[in-house]
Image 1 (cartoon, helix red, strand yellow):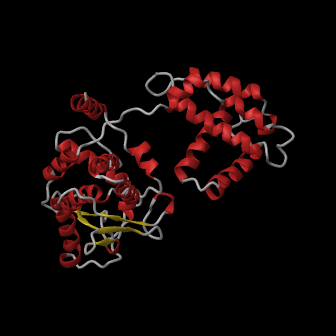
Image 2 (spheres, one colour):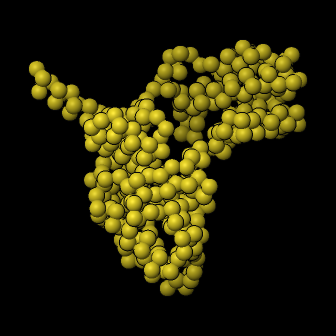
Image 3 (spheres, helix red, strand yellow):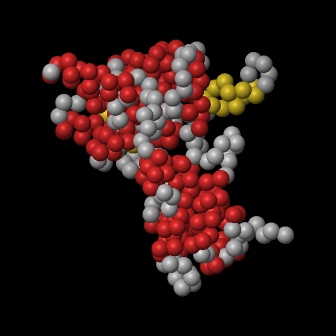
Length: 343
């Protein structure tokens, strides 16, 4: 009977996951990805003790992974291969320095998890991704219904992300006190707001229109003056289950609790874009929209630095490389414009 785990492997894996989380400060999602890659290799190696690792195992696993097919019966993508093998390379490099493994595994053994340079270039190539325009997002917001509190919350949520560029996890955990309507800002206090890398910063409202700002203002005032909620209550609360008109349990009113994760926010976006007759864009895509807006509006390096910081980026290059790619259509417009005006 094939064994499904190895006690020695489980112990050293736990140590590695703690190392990733505490020493390398990686997120739960990153740790889970590493765990999945290691589990994939263990399954292939029949849970043989890591101390018995030999570089030929890495080569054989790499070849087997390249032949593997996914759920759609297609070969795994180069990006999947690259990601899985990179996690394994880092794990075995770390393992080579651990007591009890140093004499069994050399640091260079992990290099055999490398894929070819050609495949690595394919896997890591930056590809143009569709990004919604400001006009499209405003169209979506305008089409959203506002009959119930839940519908008004949904519309205000989409408007808030456009206004602040906040990540969905931060929005899900925001409280009323984090919204400063006087100065026009979202105070992302990492002690209570789930920010990336637990970073505290303030996002001043982006210049996307007074109509968008007013939707957020009216929602906050509704919670404070009509619902009589306190400053520690959620800005975008999850719905409460109650018996509706159909005599069935439905989401017909708001609770005073935060969502436990950002999945409901993505569902709201999906429904809103479908209602507007547009393809679905994830909440995070609005950050790309705002980065591109900043490229057009900012006139000095200082202005773009401030814009970048407003998105929570420590360096301008993060905004430029990760969010500010020029779309193919815009690229053509710019090149044609240069040629028309300067030749």
